[in-house]
Image (cartoon, rainbow, N blue to C red; front, side, top):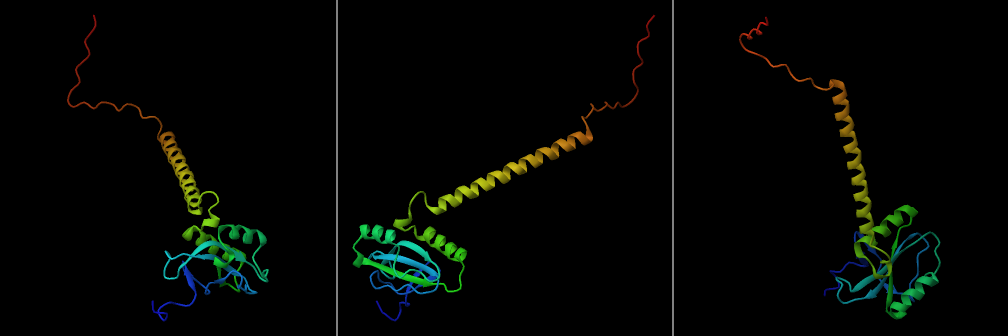
Length: 174
């Protein structure tokens, strides 16, 4: 592959992370951002790195990963095979970083973050609950409207039968 055609860094969704570096060589920037922990996978293209997990980090982060993450990832593979790519977001809020993190997790479903049902299923369940609630409210409103119309006009008396022509005289009683 022509090295001039490949952009520097690695792209996940709409975000361009820095060039992947070995876990042992990574230097996390002093600003806030999101990082991706990767492993080599020849099935991924254009760069052969598969994300294992995405993490958010705030201002003045620790120089290394939290010990729990490092131990969990070491079980998956050798530390030499793990890579880290950083997306620096210097003027971002924690909410913005969390939104990006959730978006990346939904898009790539990394193996270290698949505890429980995937995020998109939770979103669908939440949306379905909202739609059911909205439908229930609209049904109640329609019933109330029909009841008020019924009360306004009252029960309909049977319409009088119109006759055309003369009415027969009642029979005379003697």
